[in-house]
Length: 404
Image 1 (cartoon, rainbow, N blue to C red):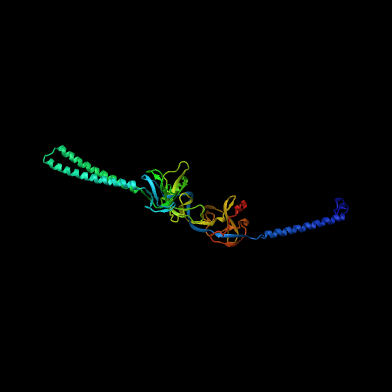
Image 2 (tube, rainbow, N blue to C red):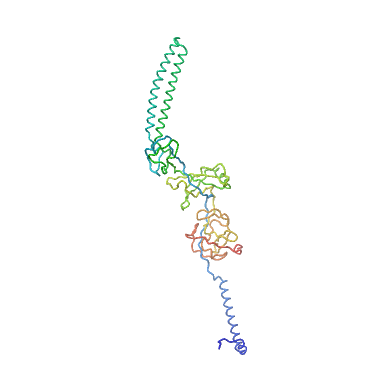
């Protein structure tokens, strides 16, 4: 037999049916009373306050800047080339060495040029003697010409011969200067302070004048950071340049340290047609060789300083349907949703142009359980800074929250 009663059996037993109906009514009344008690407890504030970490909004002078990608280049770059032909007999440096201005780097076989110098000196001595003799003869001819013992033609010939001999001496002296210069070119020296690259010829190679590079030297201190800005920012750059030299902060992409400060030293004279950008250059010190030519760098061009800007930790910012907002903690420990207008980031903080005042307490962690007007419990207060390890929690504000 089934342990359950059918409706037909219940109808046959009216007394049992009445008892069952009364029991169900009593149970329903008890359940309703229990629900009312629970609702009353919730409405009475049974939910505990949200646990939050807060920070104080602060006021400070901050830079207004442009962030760009740049590339470093050497202040000076020299490609050494031979100025005389001959065989390379000696190298006087190591690849990658630090080079001083005037340091000897290569020696071209000097013997042919020494011989040419000696020959020129001998020729000069011979021509000087001939010129001296011609000058003496011209003086004698002048004396006898005045006595009308020789014709004017003979006197002119003697005078012209003396002048030609003197000109020949000057030509010999110039040839000697050329020979000395060529001999000096056999000793190839560095024209700048810098760092040597890899040599492009070895000892024993024969070189030709002004053909083929021998070595590339680059000056690394100071160093340039070349970058571009969009033409829409050109007016702001020029306006602020008129007030004084602009500063640039340069660092490598992987670095977490603050950028090294340099001066903006170049603004190109035209916008590039293809890209709509204009070239700029910052000059920075590089004694420690922190930067190397050809590296990509992050460049922050500081245009001006904004006075008394309001800063909050970036972790305080939340994104809602109506825009960016923060939760402020009122003196009575209730949360107030405030929509804000943000400016530029300043490290782990960000400028708030509207919606927050200096000294306001803003929630930087725990926003997920916070609602406008709700009670909060501040478990930590880090004035002016986000708590260590705190990360922004994305939360969408409802329309009702925005109205509050």
